[in-house]
Length: 147
Image (cartoon, rainbow, N blue to C red; front, top):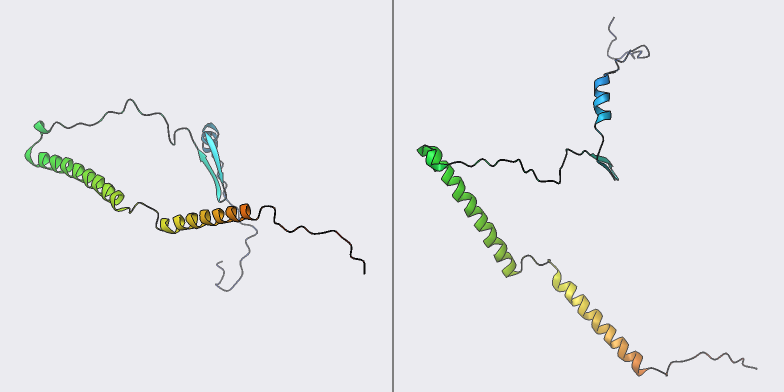
């Protein structure tokens, strides 16, 4: 018997299938985190095989011998080599130009410099005023006036 759309359904006798797979629990218990980082929005567990700090010495670089390639793969190989070198050169020239024209400086560095200059000038004026007024400060008298 199917309930109608507007009828409330009784869910008190619904049986939920629980996954009691012991293999997943065993795998989770075997893999222990290397360290746990706590953030305001949750925890992050880093495992030893996530990121390794040691370089891979067994890593074999795939070097292609251009002399053994056919014409079309050879042209593609040379194109990718030349374009990667050209991109590296453009990146270097772009960084040099940005440094030369001062684009890498903070946007409001002139305001920061002006603030420090005015602060130093104000401190210097205060120091001069303190030197001039040395000994001429007013002291409050604790005399009782009898009237």
